[in-house]
Amino acid sequence: MAEASASSTEPKEFDVFLSFRGEDTRVNFTAHLYEALVKNGIETFMDNDGLERGRDISLDLFEAIGKSKSAIVVFSENYADSSWCLDELARIDESKEEKGLIVFPVFCDVDPSHIRKQKGSVENGFKKHEKDFQNEMGKVDRWRKALNRIASVSGWHLTDYRKQYPDAIRDIIRKILEKLHPKDIVGMDSRIRNFEPFLNCRSGEVHKVGIWGTGGIGKTTFAEEVFKRIRGEFQASHFVYRVREECETEDGLTRLRKELDEKLLNNKASMKVLIVLDDVDNATQIEALVGQVGSGSKILITTRDENLLKDSGVRDVYEVEKLNDKEGLQLFCAKAFEGKHYPRRFYEELSKEFVNYADGLPLALEVLGNYLRLHKSEKEWKGELKRLRETPHEGITKVLQFSYDALNYQAKETFLDIAQQSKCPRC
Image 1 (spheres, rainbow, N blue to C red):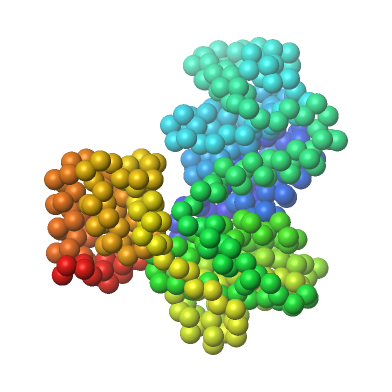
Image 2: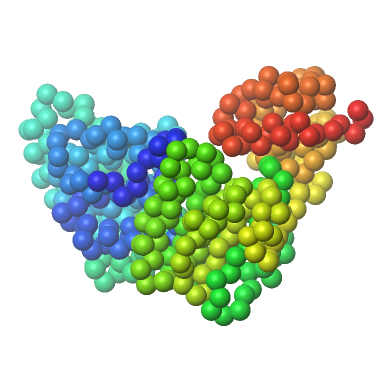
């Protein structure tokens, strides 16, 4: 049974896929690692059904790997004995090569060079595999290559993991958070500094803070960054995404409540917890989801409706600011010019025109920049700007079809709102 299950509304995505040999490490290192990942709000897929159910990895696990941002591979003495583990590893290796999956190897009482070269106990396992799969030697070769490539990635070598695992787990969590949540988000640091006074509260109270702003301004991204920076101060934490969208489905609110209970370990001891409710549009959602939490807990609520926060008794409300012209140009150029924070020659004025059109809204800047990266010539840029001015709403899916199609439902809806409200200064 997987610890995290797919949503009924859309395929579940995971921050981490956890690969391990259950007989070796499940009850000690892997169990503690999984608990730490969940407690730090890292969505983790961990298969618990026993890794020897058959000769072939299940389609569910293939899908989970494909929908993960990273994978932790816990190599142990008998990891390579399992054809199931090796199938899993081969899929991880494919996803690393094809999709850029980030891989974190951990070597528990096993020599990394033995994994890379299939020596020692690993060699004995492969002698058996070559006998069992003598008619499928292509598969065995894929396993060997996957072991070599994944074990060559820099990771953690624990020579006595039962003593070393607390420090190692803390370091793994830190590294994963750094990789999954890079710090160079345009304009973020200054906004976090402005937000810090809103985090102060009297000792012992349950503190609710509203994060308010128009669609596309980056409320979710801002809340994610705050969540990442402060969740270590709490006994448990969880980020509840897309509350409005989920509550439009049958039993959506009930499902979110159950998910929250599971992530906070049912909060039986009234723990001090951190909860983020993202994109709330009804006061009843707050009441239904928060429930009883321990003293010192903090509830962050993102919404487009400032009055909803006031009606719910949320006293501290922070308005997310638009990006200024300099920040907007930096973000736009990072997308349009492949990581550069300044315009390419001859594109300075055009870039400023698109930034002006986006009006400081990060979502619009990102979508426009991603789209224009595909259109190289100055003439094409001028043509797209003209079309945007003439048909800001009706023509948006034609002008930005590629980038628009890649957005999720909520982002599409938000971007259409932005386009409909946009006014060209020359119009």
